[in-house]
Amino acid sequence: MTAPGLSFVHHFEPATDPTERPLLLLHGTGGNETDLLPLGRAIAPGAALLSPRGKVLENGMPRFFRRLSEGVFDENDVLRRALELSDFVAEARERYNIASPIALGYSNGANIAAALLLLRPRILSGAVLLRAMPPLASPPEADLAQKPILMLSGILDPIASAQRAQHLASTLKRAGAAVEVQEIEAGHQLTPADIAIARRWLASLKATL
Ligand code: MLT
Image (cartoon, rainbow, N blue to C red):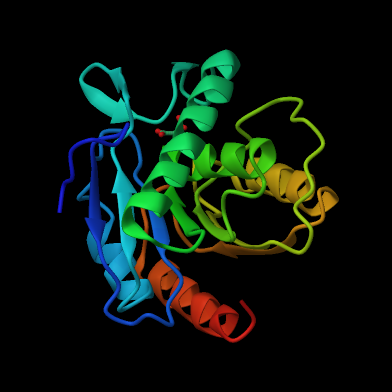
């Protein structure tokens, strides 16, 4: 369902298994609100899926914040867009009556999810960050007390290098999050291993949330 009236164009799919936490799906550059639906269904069957479309256009390609060049972000825009997205999540929770979601973000979507965690730590109940890198050079002190976060980075990724992912992981850990990082034999594109690992991780989390 693509519902009018909320502040982002989005797709919402209600849960068919009410014991599953909702997922907030955040696509990569050039994606849209339908992109990650198959991934969400594969890793959390039955979960509610909330999937907004990024509002920034780069040569016609939707993103969640502006960048100055590949891997160099417009940090003022990151700040502004993360707060805007956080307001959308709050609106959507009320509209659809859902619990605070776990973000499932890929690439640019993983980076805005990381910004949400650092800037509005209470808006997400956890996150799966696929090919993420630090969205802010000097993020504010956040309190992520034991928030569960899975990061999957590709050892051959030329965009979000495993080293940049480790840097983000350290920031999130310092803020108190329970971060698991796995480096997989992959580049920037997702692989079946991403799906298998994320699915297992979410299933093991279900018992604890
Ligand atoms: C970004 O946020 O710019 C990414 O990590 C890279 C991309 O989206 O292509």
